[in-house]
Amino acid sequence: MRSLRLRGGAANEHNFFIDRRFGKWLKVGTSGAKWINPPRRMDFLPLPERFYAGEFRHSLDEKNRVTIPSRWRRDQAEEFILLPQANHQFLLVISPEDFARMSSAVESNEGVSARDRRVFLRQLHSRAQHAVADRQGRLVLPEELCRKVGLKGEVALVGGRGRFEIWNLQRWKRAHEEETPTYEHVANVIGL
Image 1 (tube, rainbow, N blue to C red):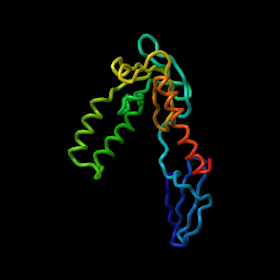
Image 2: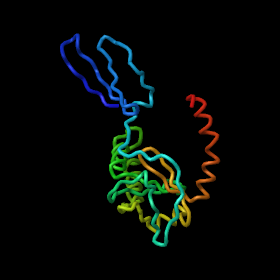
Image 3: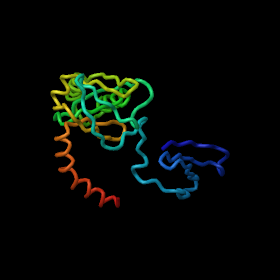
Image 4: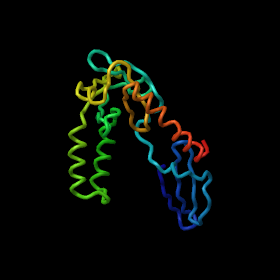
């Protein structure tokens, strides 16, 4: 949600907010007036540049290329950072900008000791690899990462907001089944 403050004298001072989800302007007066459409807590999360949603199944070819779903890709080559999940369950595909933001968040996290931050960042950056998807959306996955995560044959591409994951299909089916009760519980708690 973006904020824009317009001034026109104390009586006319307002804060305007753009709710990107609904494409509406919301106005709050300095007098403490209520929101026209009150935002929920998750409305304050910034929207990523790209939004990946859904689950797709694709096969790796002989060169370890996987095709990014058409609704996820752009009309030009696109750079990504590939990062195996800490327990090697899946391969995280993230934009270089989001990867840089993640690194910065770790660097400024006072809850982690300076030594642990250095070790984590060294490990994070040494495990990450650059990759480029061509104009047809083909992303070449390094052989080493495919081995670590167990990617071969048919794989699952799973959306995750501003990033997506590439899973070994059997591991994805198992994780999806194991995580369904948690999803259902949280859905009930939030009224979905």
